[in-house]
Amino acid sequence: MINVLFAAKPERWVTYESPLHNALDAAGITAHLSQDIPAQDVDYIVYAPNSDLQDFTPYTRAKAVLNLWAGVEKITGNETLKIPLARMVDPGLTSGMVEWVTGHVMRYHLGMDAHIVNPAQKWITKAPPLAREREVVIFGLGALGTACAQMLLGLGFRVTGWSRSPKDVAGVTCLHGNKGLDEALSRAEIAVTLLPDTPATTDLFNTETLAKMPRGAFIINPGRGPLIDDDALIGALDTGHIAHATLDVFRIEPLPQDHPFWAHPQVTVTPHIAAETRAITASESIVENIRRGEAGEAYINLVDRSLGY
Image 1: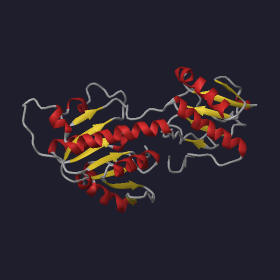
Image 2: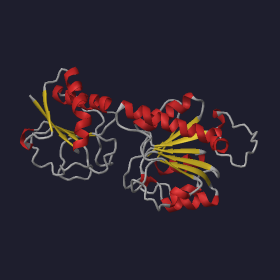
Image 3: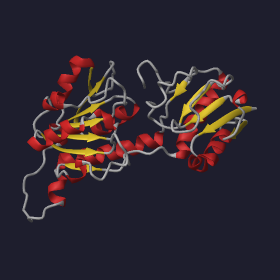
Image 4: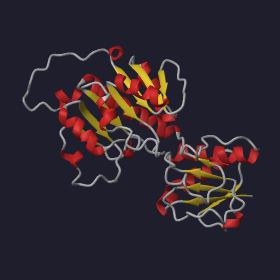
């Protein structure tokens, strides 16, 4: 019997109990799944970083921690965690992110805001360029960034991707490292930020880097709040160097009511809805790693804790 501990808030258990049981049954895995298993008997930990479990030392038999979230920044630095950690890569989450990003890229590309909000009732006759005339830069070429890049390619956009380490995505101009960052910024008529939250990416978009983007560029951030220096972005918006920003993630959530983003005419705030983990497809991903662990196969979506993602 495999013992699987569900270490997350009670409301998550309500959502995941049935999907996890169903996924285990479908995989032919006999397991005891519970929120309450003696630490020394646990084989796998299904985990949310905001759970009460913060000390992994007593879990001497555990083989892996399987994160419920795509973000792992709140657990990678836990020095008591010595076993493999897998982040959540959920097909349902990926689809949601692709749809949200594509929608906002098209909104900016087509200039839809000017038609949707047009109090002066102006007859705006200027047609937008074709997608092939517009360059979109995806900052972060992980699973989510790659999926978004492929969708935008299919719509005809010129797509560049930037990542910290080298990547190769068919049809995408792939840049990496500090040298590639300047070129990526200079190309970014529309920038989509899907980088992880690490010390190396904190305030990556600051006064200096924002100035390297084309005048009139747009920013879409469904990645992590700390990627952008809030004050620097407001400054770039106020000067018109950045035309508009759509932000789905923030340093503090919910975004405080007195934050200047709410009232800024060149900012669209969305309440962290770009993508959400779906319990059914996420449970299938978790159970696949349990199956791999029991079969002696390599886990998928393992976190490199030296990089933080």
